[in-house]
Image (cartoon, rainbow, N blue to C red; front, top):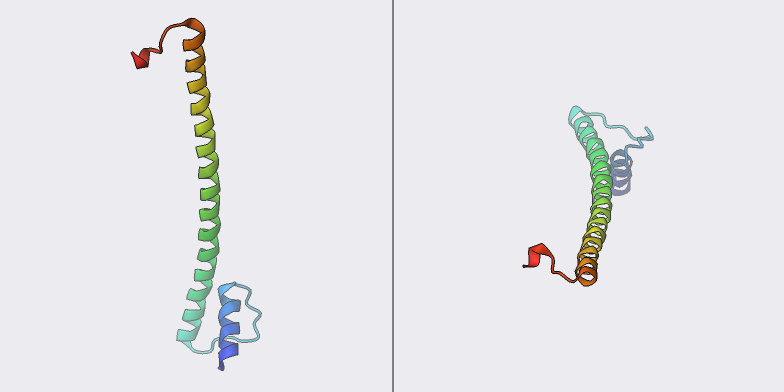
Length: 90
């Protein structure tokens, strides 16, 4: 198998498309192709879960920072309006 055909077979196997025009013949080649296909599936699954995890943690951190700022604002407003300090600061 020349370089381009090997690259083509590897890419098609890794992306789990499997056109079927090139197929492994020996037992070890079939085993390696199956392992490469599983690696392709796991890579996509891990990539998507990582991106979703980063996005959701950024959203939750933004929500928590907004929540904390709102709580601080309420305490400062209460101190200002009522004229007495917050019990935690005494």
